[in-house]
Image 1: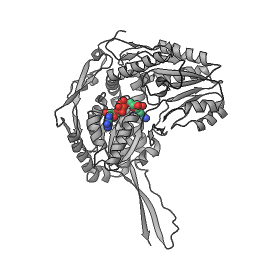
Image 2 (image 1 turned 180 degrees about the horizontal axis):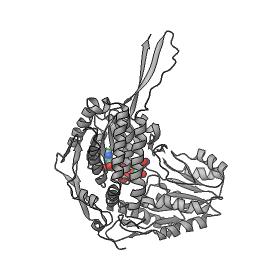
Image 3 (image 1 turned 180 degrees about the vertical axis):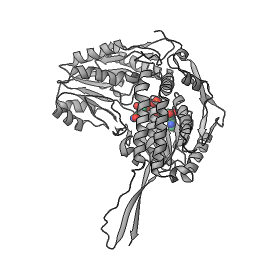
Image 4 (image 1 turned 45 degrees about the horizontal axis):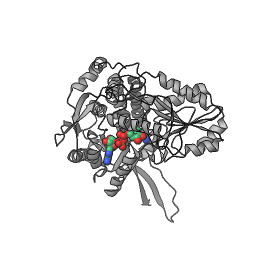
Length: 499
Ligand code: NAD
């Protein structure tokens, strides 16, 4: 695989950003970490250093929380009209749109993901969410109710912003996840602290600069780059943070929830891991199902929380479906994310490469059949081939655990939709699922039986600002889109007046 010099592929705006110092945004200022520590950011396609950013810790968290507190309590944000807040969100959406190519390139370079993905998903998805939540800002209403207490009472509710929200996101979709989490909190009137993953801090720093260009009052949006174990843990346990929004692995989500409860019982929103099933019934339209399932697992090299990592196919069409997906896997063009032709980029980090290789080796030792891929390629880059495994059994770690790589486990089934539902639900997770069939009755009956936050019929990885997204079981607490996302960031106050 030829890896071109990424500098030759980077536009002038993204290159200029990369050349700047990368600091923390606290209040109105870009500052260095109190400790003076920095952390290295590498290009996953080459393993080479591309930038250094500040490594914040608890002392920086204190400053950012204080800035967010002032902006919430006495700053203009919580005091301005909701409609005015909506205008800020819309203005930021416009600014993101006008920097679309630059943001896509920064995201692609930092995550390793193909730039075409960032162009069609990350940037437009961020813009759509800001615009959608801008519309909600002025529509967050209370209610009146008819109470049964004797006497004359006027009772009503008010939805008030919860306060200061810390937002911790992972490395797969740093910009889009930061925006998806902050937009409902800001629409509700909260102020936020963004903490990107240590592997991929760059687009969040650029977002902070664009937030300033949009004219947000100081302290409404703060950016802390740094390690999860230090600054992430400090935010989770902080006594003056009112809510925490965490997106990441289930194991870390449990630590965050424990810290949140043990400190000040802050409200916790969790979007966690998955091992999502794709179920292909006997009557599926295979021209749709085969590329659909392949896209569901190989997009972003499988580093998607909702990836279709477990495939259940009716035994009569099993061979045809898995060989079709294996053909697609072999045809995906591996390369540097910034190359517009690339369809499979590297994994995000050497740690993630080691982890995924460990699963491939374990799968081989357990006796899986590799129908495609199964290897690390590309020298110093963190590339793994698109992999299709058959002869998988339910006790294997490749089947049970979230691999977060381009690895599909395929299994035939012989029974009816009850059997398909039993297999799909045989997991600790419950984030996403897809059903591929031309039979509407079976599609909707099965959709009821599958225990997951989303069920897609004849599609996979469906995300929209209006469509709830979130997990059953150990995939999380709460929903990340629609009005449900705003509710997390509000307190409902009941008011009663004796008349
Ligand atoms: P991770 O849990 O290791 O890290 C996520 C974030 O948590 C990072 O910012 C990290 O710095 C921070 N963190 C680490 N330790 C912490 C601690 N002790 N306290 C506070 N913060 C801490 O996850 P990851 O490996 O970066 O991301 C992959 C995981 O994210 C997968 O499990 C994936 O399914 C999940 N994910 C879920 C969704 C969703 O919407 N459900 C979306 C994307 C990714």
